[in-house]
Length: 278
Image (cartoon, rainbow, N blue to C red; front, side, top):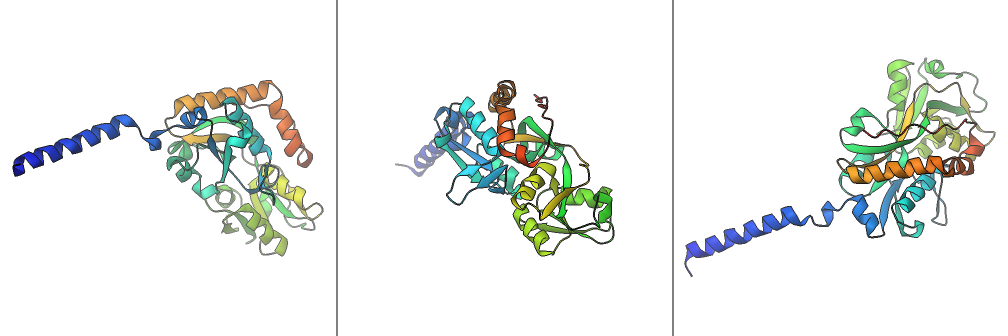
Protein backbone atom coordinates (compact mmCIF):
# COMPACT_ATOMS: atom_id res chain seq x y z
CA UNK A 1 0.00 0.00 0.00
CA UNK A 2 1.42 3.39 -0.99
CA UNK A 3 2.17 6.10 1.57
CA UNK A 4 -0.33 8.38 -0.18
CA UNK A 5 -3.09 5.79 0.21
CA UNK A 6 -2.27 5.30 3.89
CA UNK A 7 -2.45 9.05 4.43
CA UNK A 8 -5.79 9.26 2.61
CA UNK A 9 -7.26 6.45 4.73
CA UNK A 10 -5.97 8.04 7.93
CA UNK A 11 -7.45 11.43 7.06
CA UNK A 12 -10.75 9.78 6.18
CA UNK A 13 -10.88 7.99 9.52
CA UNK A 14 -10.24 11.24 11.38
CA UNK A 15 -13.00 12.96 9.41
CA UNK A 16 -15.49 10.21 10.26
CA UNK A 17 -14.55 10.48 13.94
CA UNK A 18 -15.04 14.25 13.93
CA UNK A 19 -18.47 13.96 12.30
CA UNK A 20 -19.54 11.28 14.75
CA UNK A 21 -18.42 13.44 17.66
CA UNK A 22 -20.33 16.45 16.33
CA UNK A 23 -23.51 14.49 15.70
CA UNK A 24 -23.42 11.83 18.38
CA UNK A 25 -23.63 14.14 21.40
CA UNK A 26 -21.91 11.77 23.86
CA UNK A 27 -22.63 11.65 27.57
CA UNK A 28 -21.09 15.08 28.09
CA UNK A 29 -23.84 16.61 25.92
CA UNK A 30 -26.67 15.10 28.00
CA UNK A 31 -28.94 17.69 29.59
CA UNK A 32 -30.51 17.64 33.02
CA UNK A 33 -33.75 16.64 31.31
CA UNK A 34 -31.98 13.67 29.66
CA UNK A 35 -30.70 12.53 33.05
CA UNK A 36 -34.16 12.95 34.56
CA UNK A 37 -35.68 10.81 31.80
CA UNK A 38 -33.11 8.15 32.73
CA UNK A 39 -34.39 8.37 36.32
CA UNK A 40 -31.37 9.97 38.01
CA UNK A 41 -30.37 13.52 38.97
CA UNK A 42 -27.36 15.11 40.66
CA UNK A 43 -28.45 18.27 42.47
CA UNK A 44 -26.17 20.81 44.13
CA UNK A 45 -27.09 22.06 47.61
CA UNK A 46 -25.33 23.48 50.65
CA UNK A 47 -24.33 21.02 53.35
CA UNK A 48 -23.84 23.52 56.18
CA UNK A 49 -26.85 25.85 56.19
CA UNK A 50 -29.33 24.88 58.94
CA UNK A 51 -32.93 25.05 57.79
CA UNK A 52 -31.91 25.36 54.14
CA UNK A 53 -29.39 22.76 53.04
CA UNK A 54 -27.87 20.69 55.81
CA UNK A 55 -26.21 17.28 55.94
CA UNK A 56 -26.97 15.42 59.15
CA UNK A 57 -24.48 13.11 60.87
CA UNK A 58 -26.38 10.10 59.55
CA UNK A 59 -25.88 11.32 55.97
CA UNK A 60 -29.45 12.50 55.44
CA UNK A 61 -30.27 15.96 54.11
CA UNK A 62 -32.78 18.48 55.43
CA UNK A 63 -33.84 22.03 54.71
CA UNK A 64 -35.97 24.29 52.57
CA UNK A 65 -33.71 24.07 49.52
CA UNK A 66 -33.68 20.29 49.87
CA UNK A 67 -37.50 20.23 49.81
CA UNK A 68 -37.56 22.52 46.76
CA UNK A 69 -35.05 20.24 45.01
CA UNK A 70 -37.01 17.07 45.80
CA UNK A 71 -40.29 18.57 44.61
CA UNK A 72 -38.77 19.76 41.32
CA UNK A 73 -37.07 16.41 40.79
CA UNK A 74 -40.40 14.65 41.38
CA UNK A 75 -42.06 16.79 38.72
CA UNK A 76 -39.23 15.75 36.37
CA UNK A 77 -39.97 12.11 37.15
CA UNK A 78 -37.16 11.39 39.62
CA UNK A 79 -37.84 9.94 43.06
CA UNK A 80 -36.00 11.18 46.18
CA UNK A 81 -34.00 7.96 46.44
CA UNK A 82 -32.61 8.52 42.95
CA UNK A 83 -31.24 11.99 43.72
CA UNK A 84 -27.54 12.42 44.45
CA UNK A 85 -27.00 15.58 46.49
CA UNK A 86 -23.62 17.22 45.95
CA UNK A 87 -22.11 20.00 48.04
CA UNK A 88 -21.76 23.24 46.08
CA UNK A 89 -19.71 25.97 47.82
CA UNK A 90 -20.65 29.49 46.75
CA UNK A 91 -17.42 30.13 44.84
CA UNK A 92 -17.80 26.94 42.79
CA UNK A 93 -21.44 27.05 41.75
CA UNK A 94 -21.00 28.39 38.21
CA UNK A 95 -18.04 26.12 37.43
CA UNK A 96 -19.85 23.02 38.72
CA UNK A 97 -22.82 23.76 36.46
CA UNK A 98 -20.67 24.53 33.42
CA UNK A 99 -18.51 21.42 33.96
CA UNK A 100 -21.55 19.17 34.29
CA UNK A 101 -20.76 18.15 37.89
CA UNK A 102 -24.42 18.77 38.76
CA UNK A 103 -27.66 18.88 36.80
CA UNK A 104 -28.86 21.95 38.64
CA UNK A 105 -28.26 23.83 41.89
CA UNK A 106 -30.71 24.76 44.64
CA UNK A 107 -28.47 26.49 47.18
CA UNK A 108 -29.60 29.99 48.24
CA UNK A 109 -28.41 30.99 44.76
CA UNK A 110 -29.21 34.66 44.12
CA UNK A 111 -30.05 35.53 40.52
CA UNK A 112 -27.73 38.27 39.23
CA UNK A 113 -26.92 39.62 35.77
CA UNK A 114 -23.26 38.67 36.19
CA UNK A 115 -24.15 35.05 36.98
CA UNK A 116 -26.62 34.91 34.08
CA UNK A 117 -23.70 35.47 31.73
CA UNK A 118 -22.42 32.00 32.72
CA UNK A 119 -25.50 29.99 33.74
CA UNK A 120 -29.27 30.11 33.42
CA UNK A 121 -31.82 30.37 36.23
CA UNK A 122 -35.31 29.04 36.81
CA UNK A 123 -37.45 30.87 39.33
CA UNK A 124 -37.14 32.75 41.56
CA UNK A 125 -38.68 30.48 44.19
CA UNK A 126 -37.97 32.78 47.15
CA UNK A 127 -37.03 36.40 47.86
CA UNK A 128 -34.68 37.07 50.78
CA UNK A 129 -32.76 40.14 51.96
CA UNK A 130 -29.26 40.74 53.26
CA UNK A 131 -28.98 40.97 57.04
CA UNK A 132 -26.51 40.93 59.93
CA UNK A 133 -25.90 38.40 62.70
CA UNK A 134 -24.10 39.34 65.93
CA UNK A 135 -23.67 37.96 69.42
CA UNK A 136 -26.68 38.32 71.69
CA UNK A 137 -24.86 40.61 74.11
CA UNK A 138 -23.61 42.96 71.40
CA UNK A 139 -25.09 46.44 71.73
CA UNK A 140 -22.67 48.35 69.47
CA UNK A 141 -24.01 46.99 66.18
CA UNK A 142 -27.67 47.79 65.67
CA UNK A 143 -27.79 48.30 61.89
CA UNK A 144 -25.47 47.99 58.92
CA UNK A 145 -24.05 51.51 59.29
CA UNK A 146 -22.89 50.55 62.82
CA UNK A 147 -20.09 48.51 61.23
CA UNK A 148 -18.21 51.75 60.60
CA UNK A 149 -15.12 51.98 62.81
CA UNK A 150 -13.04 49.02 61.57
CA UNK A 151 -15.48 46.37 62.75
CA UNK A 152 -14.68 42.88 61.42
CA UNK A 153 -17.35 41.50 59.10
CA UNK A 154 -17.34 37.92 57.83
CA UNK A 155 -18.86 36.38 54.73
CA UNK A 156 -17.82 33.65 52.28
CA UNK A 157 -15.55 33.68 49.26
CA UNK A 158 -17.45 33.79 45.99
CA UNK A 159 -20.38 35.67 47.45
CA UNK A 160 -21.02 39.41 47.41
CA UNK A 161 -22.67 40.52 50.71
CA UNK A 162 -19.58 41.70 52.59
CA UNK A 163 -18.28 43.75 49.68
CA UNK A 164 -21.75 45.26 49.29
CA UNK A 165 -21.54 46.51 52.88
CA UNK A 166 -18.11 48.02 52.30
CA UNK A 167 -19.13 49.64 49.01
CA UNK A 168 -22.40 51.17 50.19
CA UNK A 169 -22.75 51.29 53.97
CA UNK A 170 -19.51 51.13 55.99
CA UNK A 171 -16.40 51.87 53.93
CA UNK A 172 -13.85 51.25 56.69
CA UNK A 173 -15.24 47.86 57.73
CA UNK A 174 -12.66 45.04 57.74
CA UNK A 175 -13.78 42.19 55.50
CA UNK A 176 -13.00 38.63 56.51
CA UNK A 177 -13.71 36.01 53.82
CA UNK A 178 -13.84 32.32 54.72
CA UNK A 179 -14.84 29.21 52.76
CA UNK A 180 -18.19 28.56 54.42
CA UNK A 181 -20.77 30.38 56.52
CA UNK A 182 -20.35 27.81 59.27
CA UNK A 183 -16.73 28.96 59.58
CA UNK A 184 -17.94 32.54 59.84
CA UNK A 185 -20.33 31.53 62.60
CA UNK A 186 -17.53 29.87 64.56
CA UNK A 187 -15.43 33.03 64.16
CA UNK A 188 -18.35 35.09 65.46
CA UNK A 189 -18.87 32.84 68.45
CA UNK A 190 -15.14 32.92 69.28
CA UNK A 191 -14.97 36.71 68.96
CA UNK A 192 -12.64 36.72 65.93
CA UNK A 193 -15.20 38.79 63.99
CA UNK A 194 -17.87 41.23 65.08
CA UNK A 195 -20.64 40.26 62.67
CA UNK A 196 -21.60 37.91 59.86
CA UNK A 197 -23.53 39.03 56.81
CA UNK A 198 -25.47 37.15 54.20
CA UNK A 199 -29.16 36.64 53.44
CA UNK A 200 -31.47 36.91 56.44
CA UNK A 201 -32.97 33.48 55.88
CA UNK A 202 -29.51 31.87 56.10
CA UNK A 203 -28.63 33.81 59.24
CA UNK A 204 -31.95 32.84 60.81
CA UNK A 205 -31.00 29.20 60.46
CA UNK A 206 -27.74 29.70 62.30
CA UNK A 207 -29.41 31.79 64.98
CA UNK A 208 -31.87 28.95 65.50
CA UNK A 209 -28.97 26.56 66.07
CA UNK A 210 -27.60 28.72 68.88
CA UNK A 211 -30.66 30.10 70.71
CA UNK A 212 -29.82 32.78 73.23
CA UNK A 213 -26.32 33.20 71.82
CA UNK A 214 -26.79 34.92 68.44
CA UNK A 215 -29.29 37.45 67.10
CA UNK A 216 -30.34 39.05 63.83
CA UNK A 217 -30.27 42.84 63.97
CA UNK A 218 -31.66 45.71 61.92
CA UNK A 219 -33.69 45.52 58.74
CA UNK A 220 -32.72 43.81 55.50
CA UNK A 221 -31.00 46.10 53.03
CA UNK A 222 -31.01 44.20 49.72
CA UNK A 223 -33.36 42.03 47.68
CA UNK A 224 -32.05 38.55 46.90
CA UNK A 225 -34.04 36.44 44.44
CA UNK A 226 -33.22 32.76 44.86
CA UNK A 227 -33.19 30.78 41.63
CA UNK A 228 -32.35 27.27 40.49
CA UNK A 229 -29.13 27.42 38.47
CA UNK A 230 -28.61 25.20 35.45
CA UNK A 231 -26.51 25.01 32.31
CA UNK A 232 -26.77 28.03 30.05
CA UNK A 233 -28.93 27.47 26.98
CA UNK A 234 -30.85 24.48 28.42
CA UNK A 235 -34.20 26.12 27.79
CA UNK A 236 -36.21 22.89 27.84
CA UNK A 237 -35.12 21.95 31.36
CA UNK A 238 -35.47 25.52 32.58
CA UNK A 239 -39.07 25.66 31.32
CA UNK A 240 -39.90 22.39 33.10
CA UNK A 241 -38.34 23.58 36.35
CA UNK A 242 -40.28 26.84 36.11
CA UNK A 243 -43.47 24.81 35.65
CA UNK A 244 -42.59 22.77 38.74
CA UNK A 245 -41.96 25.89 40.84
CA UNK A 246 -45.32 27.35 39.85
CA UNK A 247 -47.02 24.03 40.65
CA UNK A 248 -45.38 24.10 44.07
CA UNK A 249 -46.75 27.59 44.68
CA UNK A 250 -50.24 26.56 43.58
CA UNK A 251 -50.67 23.29 45.49
CA UNK A 252 -49.45 24.59 48.86
CA UNK A 253 -46.27 22.51 48.97
CA UNK A 254 -44.10 25.63 48.79
CA UNK A 255 -45.58 27.19 51.92
CA UNK A 256 -45.58 23.87 53.80
CA UNK A 257 -41.91 23.32 52.96
CA UNK A 258 -41.07 26.75 54.36
CA UNK A 259 -43.08 26.26 57.55
CA UNK A 260 -41.57 22.81 58.13
CA UNK A 261 -37.99 24.06 57.79
CA UNK A 262 -37.54 27.82 58.15
CA UNK A 263 -40.88 28.84 59.60
CA UNK A 264 -39.97 28.33 63.28
CA UNK A 265 -36.82 30.42 62.81
CA UNK A 266 -38.08 33.48 60.96
CA UNK A 267 -41.38 35.34 60.97
CA UNK A 268 -42.53 35.95 57.43
CA UNK A 269 -45.59 36.69 55.38
CA UNK A 270 -45.21 34.30 52.50
CA UNK A 271 -45.98 35.64 49.05
CA UNK A 272 -44.79 33.53 46.11
CA UNK A 273 -42.57 35.56 43.78
CA UNK A 274 -43.33 35.85 40.07
CA UNK A 275 -41.36 33.35 38.02
CA UNK A 276 -39.18 35.05 35.41
CA UNK A 277 -39.40 33.17 32.12
CA UNK A 278 -36.76 35.21 30.33
